[in-house]
Image (tube, rainbow, N blue to C red; front, side, top):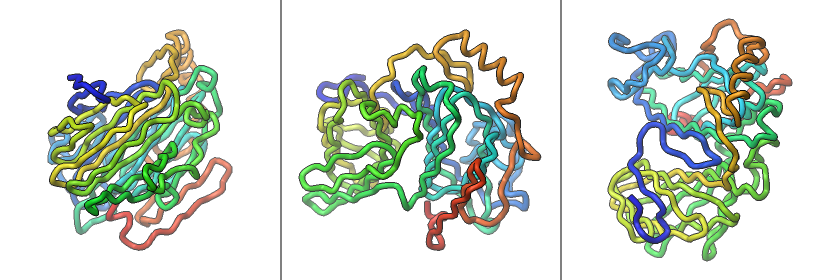
Length: 357
């Protein structure tokens, strides 16, 4: 469906969400896990689940490739980056660089796979008395050919460091905006957001003219906000409407969850419907190079894919330094990151922030 005006294309959301160069993939996970058992998995029968390949959403949640704790045990990547935004719940990360982390409640991990990395992403359930909701985005951002064999890089952006602002419309309804990447320019006196978060050095997002942006929006009922025009030349933009009943996009009513490609050079007015709505914005100037993909490897040619597979079989991208393929980091809910050089980060948040997301 292609309405007139700044809307280029509008499609219902599927799984995964469709993306545009320089993005490769976007998955939205929203799992209503029940109370936890003693092993930090769900206190529920796993009968009828295809463990190791369970994307069923049976009872509102999936085990994915986990067999005790939900999540994704050790698996390789080469040639792109993962950006993981955890809105509710926790992720336990471990990788072949020797890095580990526990993050959630608005934290973001940005991982440059480059020439090759193996990592695990497990979803430990800590509450044995009540439900354990998990909500996250995982976004794959491509690397240009010159950076596909870059040194892997592990970055954490803690929730309290992510730039945010709240815009009020003329009727007093608010739109909350968070910028994981790319500055949001101010409109008509609004403060704008962005600036302090620096993408990894070899990322396409680190190029000044790449115009990469990753933003989240939360609109109160009937709120009005104008999505500003992109500043770069050739930028492409997708607005994902994933929560809420309806929204007007440049005067076009959208009453189902949708991926909406917009002209990036146009300001677009959003008028929310009668319940709170949420959006993800992905934009960037396309890399414009051939894409060859085989599962977790994304290169420019099939020969490079074959080389990636051979390299992984030979080297395991540095090997796996952990005693099992699905590590979890205990029952302490505190967030932390231990970097490959041994340095540690331990941010502090008020009690309850992780539970609220």
